[in-house]
Length: 227
Image (tube, rainbow, N blue to C red):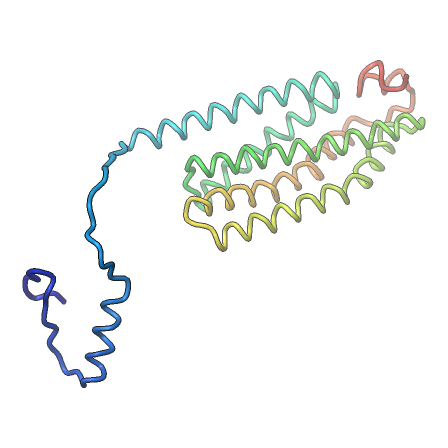
């Protein structure tokens, strides 16, 4: 407790101290003292609106990126691409619900982690669809191709997501508060994206039924799939 003014950098600390305790306290107080004067070089004031602007721009960028990815999936994978877009929409809704439930304060770094996790979700769908294309080329029906595609892609999806989750845990454990926000949203997003890709997308594709005719399966991935 400071009970009086400290003029000229000199003060007296009173209390029940032994000589050794007094010397130890004086040594601890002198730790970090610099024998040079401190001069003010510059000052800068940042308004609260800067953070709000960065957050808003991050959200707009995320929505634009999600729209572009959705168009790519639909043009390249046709019907499975549409189902993947629906699955990604479910993923976004689940993530926003979790952010509200935990709760999570969305900073600019947190939005970046969320957007990056959407990329992981898209990557899982791409792996699954490419495996399905290989099975369809061999003449399998859509249901069998979907089952084999998911089973063969699962190992790659699992390994990639586990390594991402481990990275997120390390960043959250050792990082600063800014890094913690990124790591938290990214780690949660990776886990949820894995569930949506494996469970929701697979459910949607299986609900379409089984089409053994190649002319019908062309609608799944385009006319050039089996050329």
